[in-house]
Amino acid sequence: MTSRFSRAPKALLYVCGWLPLLVLYSFMIWRVQKVPLAVAVGYAVAYLLPAVALGAALWHARARLPWSRWRGPVIAAGELTTAVAYTIAWNLCWVLEVRLLGGSAGRRLAAAIVADLNFGWELAFGALIYGVQAGIWHAVRILGQLREKEISAAKSESLRVRSEMEALRGRLDPHFLFNGLHSITALVREDPARAEEALLQFSALLRRVLAAKADASDAVSLGDEMDFVHDYLAIERLRLGDRLRLSESVSDEANAQVLPAFSVQPLVENAIRHAVAPRREGGAISIEAKVRDGRLIISVVDDGPGADPAIVAGAKGVGLSVIRQRLRLQYGETADLSVETQSGKGFRVVLDLPALQEDAASGFK
Image 1: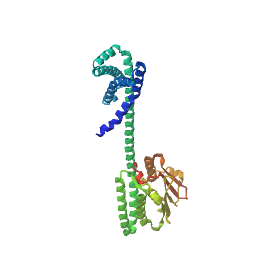
Image 2: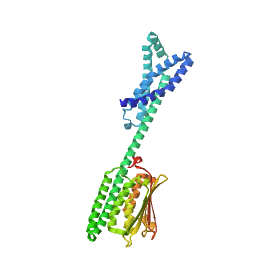
Image 3: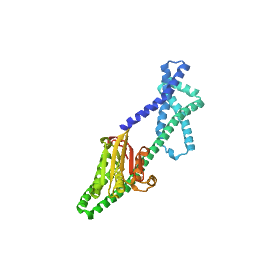
Image 4: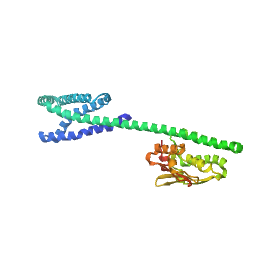
């Protein structure tokens, strides 16, 4: 039932395509033959009806032919032969129609029509009408093939992006897990009780990692990402104590936005690794997130020793490079990760992403 209704608009469009020719042909008969307009329209309908029916039959027949296997000359020869056959069949059907529906007068008219046929003109006119139909059909066919190729290419690109995202997450997660285990190992000899507590918190982190891997969309709210960051910081505080100083300013609107999982935690991890852990006095980390002009702006700043910008640009570390690649795959040119640093002046990393809330992020890869 659904397929029948889906064909109805196409059939209606096909019939409507003949209306200009019907109007033109009726007008010509009315002016030349000096007959009533209704008679002229009836004659035009009777004349064009076989052409319409044959054209519809050929339209469906073409759809079953293996066009991809044939070259241009073969297609042209086939269409030329079909045009001749179409014209002959059209005129035969028209004469038969007049003969069957017109009674004795119709038989006399049919004989007169056959006697007066100018086959050269009829062939040219029929070929022209057939050529228009064939041209439209081939245009529709080619456009359909191009559309299928576009859809296929889009699906292939989506699968490629998803596989690359999974590969990048596979690089990121072990990096984080090994660092977490290293932090816990440092506590085992110094404070076994705190090490046990850290292991429990670490197991909670592992559950979050596995849950994120099971989620094929790779999308989390910033609020969920910050919960993950807080669990990670709880483990690091067991090791670093008061040496780790944190300030946080994340708006409720920002917490509702969606971003790729593991986008913020590696930035915090880098800050601890380079700005807090190596220094006896520790260091301060600031996390800020806000929505501005349709953009989600997240910054992670530390007061560590900083670095030469040229060295940072050529660094081969996992964290920043993986995040950059994931942003490129997910957002293209609409997202950015920038680094601001100088020797002795700390380190600032800014994520600039399109602001997408959870209910508007269905297309998230």
